[in-house]
Structures are given as structure tokens and as C-alpha cells.
Length: 121
Image (cartoon, rainbow, N blue to C red; front, side, top):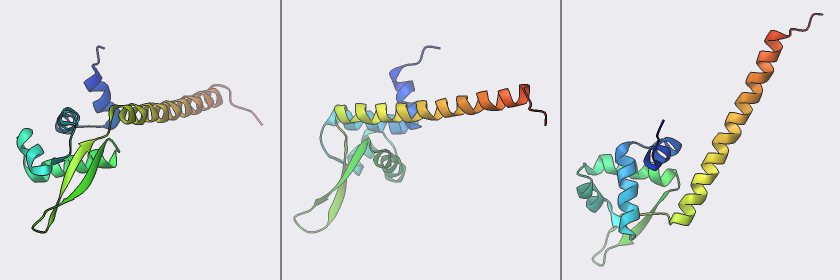
């Protein structure tokens, strides 16, 4: 198996290709970007892009802020978290998955030993 970094990130965060593309677009931009600009960049509808961005925000790898207009009103802008924070989030996620697997392996070993070596009473 020859997994790429893209495969790893997509797997760790359960991202779709569109969500990954949006994350890359935000990282490349390095500035707060409104929904309509991102929607045009990835050539998808605003509703679809909004749902993807909400997932990235919920995963804490993207941030959402409100910008106000001089003439009144407001809109949201999105930015990727900085690379150091992204690395920390990813390490945290890897550790959580590792702990989960370790627990599953211990349970499997316990259940297997219990099955193979039943205690007769």
C-alpha cells in the first residue's frame, strides 16, 4: 500500500475530496475568504460548499468569522488554522485513534483467551 499524505489526511478526518480541496484552497490563500469566492474556486454550489466548510469548522481545522459591511449586514469568512495548529490537531487525532485501537486489541486478546481457555466451574 502506497498511501499519500492526502490519503492520510482524508482518512484521519473522514474528508471527501471536495472537503480536502477546500482545505487546501484555504491553506493556500492564507487569508479569510468568503463562501462565494470558495464556491467559485472549487466550482460547486454555495450550499454544498457551506456544508463542507461547516464540517471543517467542526473538525477544528478551519475557522469561521463574521465580517460586517459598511452599509449594514454581515457575511462569513473562512480560514484554515495555521500549520502548527493543524499538526497538533492531527497528532491529537492520531493518538486518539491509537488509544482506541489499543483498547480494541486488548479486548480482542481478552475475549480470545476467554474463548480458548474457558474456566470450568
